[in-house]
Length: 112
Picture 1: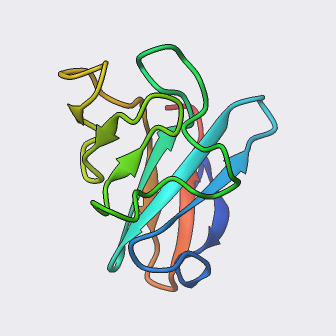
Picture 2 (picture 1 turned 45 degrees about the vertical axis):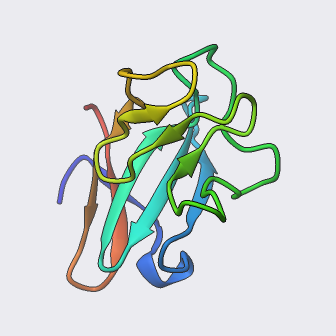
């Protein structure tokens, strides 16, 4: 696939967990695995723009299994980034376009 690059193998992320990445263009993103699917978002809470994780790669709430902003406790749906609880209710995380290849590579589409 042209205009794409490998971030990691899907198996590098435990099912129901996430992993952060710093891109060459200065963006910090994270990828959440749900079974054989991967969802990517900018690592920036829509409430105040702070990173969601205080501890590296700790993006998922142990209590709910949803994406958690460690700063103010906002919770987000994994599949669409919608805020369902906290100070940014009704807002969303900014998606990052990903694709999981047949070989299990998680690809970041550049230029989107």
